[in-house]
Length: 159
Length: 190
Image (tube, rainbow over all chains, first blue to last red; front, top):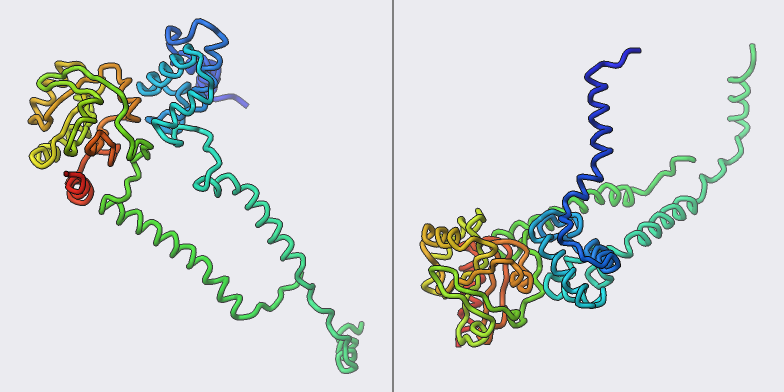
């Protein structure tokens, strides 16, 4: 079977995209905003990965190229350089932007349903399964009467 | 498995279940929509934790044609003011300008130009018909982070003593002013 030239071109383009995608993702970061100390930079990245970019809302500030995300990355690095703990920096952010900025929501009354949902779903599933199998099978039919027996033998009788 | 003859009540209940769920969802959506028209529910609003807290520490320079201000200025206030983050490059800010201009005689509005070139912010304010009693410039956008601002426009109602009494992360509308801002501002007046 011959491959259509267009399709082959598309495949190559797709492979190229997949191959270069990680490079593009890294290119978003301006190296000048990184901290000189690699350990501190790693910590800042770990904190940033937990913080929501409030513009794009579904990306962390480390992944986003939005202006606000860049400012927040800068602020996180300032605090890390000052020697603050991860908890202190997280609290600083939550104090300003609320729990919404945390990509991993804390366990509170408001997020209770969110956190217990997997367990709840499992319990409901087990409940349904139990309820289904617990139901008595159809009662065994009463034995055939003489009349029925006679009709059956009439019907099945080989001629 | 045999098909068990289920009781008519149970069959009716099973048939009603989807209707009940659809009805519940409908009521939920209806409440959201009516809240949006009344201004009590705003899906774009990120809940600012700053409510009922003093304004953050900041001091911002002048933005022509107004004069800058600091946290101390807001904390020294005896009557409420509206603090409005704006930028010349922000389209919703253009859209809310007529509304702010209609409001400025009833409630003082202090503007903060967010990450804007001074000449651009000046041009914007002049074109729109300046609604601001004072204008400060937040060039690097770092004071905005202390305010919990995530974009422009964003507006805060500051009560006496510099306490944040109300906040929105969407453009100010006529409905917001009538239903929320003015009643709240009037209640905060000494």
